[in-house]
View 1 (tube, rainbow, N blue to C red):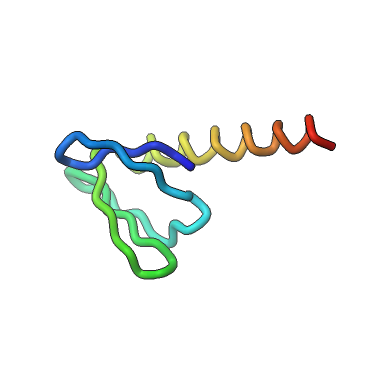
View 2 (view 1 turned 45 degrees about the horizontal axis):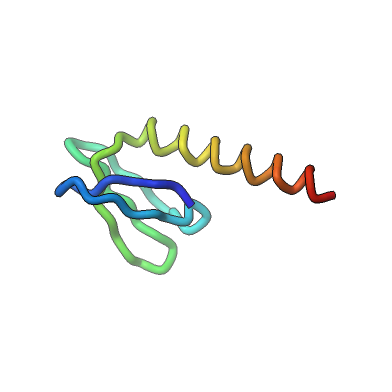
Length: 66
């Protein structure tokens, strides 16, 4: 899960495997594959980097287990 910030400053966690679409303007609109939509303060570039870090850490954890 990646941590994101709503426009009101509260945080929430999102499973990046369910992201279908990201649109950036003043805030970033995220649409999930199930149709749910979220608006967050982070830019698409920041979100992409958080997704990459999430996947790197998940991959490293799997290597430790195997």
